[in-house]
Length: 149
Image 1 (cartoon, rainbow, N blue to C red):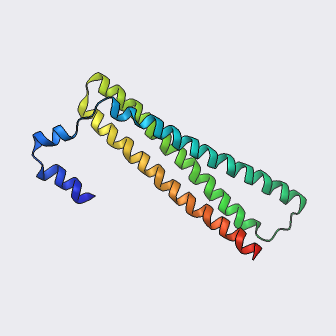
Image 2 (tube, one colour; image 1 turned 60 degrees about the horizontal axis):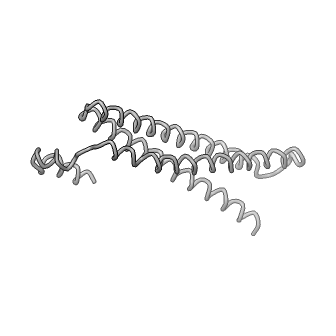
Image 3 (tube, one colour; image 1 turned 60 degrees about the vertical axis):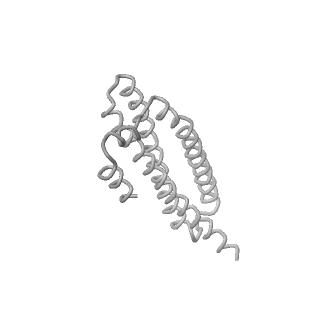
C-alpha cells in the first residue's frame, strides 16, 4: 500500500494525479450510509454487552462465589473500553465527513482532501478496534465452551 502511495505521488505526473483525485460532494456523501450501518452494528454490540453484564450481575447476586468471575469481569471491561473507542472513532469519522462536505461546498479543495483523508483514517482505526473486540469476544465464547466440555 505504501508503494502504491509513493507511486501515485512521485511517478504519476501532477496533472494526471489531480485528475485522479477529484473529490466531489458525492464522495463523502457515500460514507453516510456506511457509517450509519457501522453505528448500528456498534450499538448492537453495546446493547448485547450491557445485557450480558446485567445477566452476570443477577447471577452474581444469587451465587456470589463463582470461580471465573474475575476473568469475565476483566474481559467485559476490556470489551466495554474497545466499544467506547470504536464509537468515538466512528463519530470522529462522521464529523470529519460532514466537515469535508462543508469544505467542498466552500470550494476549499486542498482542505477537503486532507479532511477526507483524516476521515478515512479514523474509519480505518474504528474498524481495526472492532476487529480486536471481535477477537476478545471470541475468546470469551471459547471460555464458555471450555466450561461446558
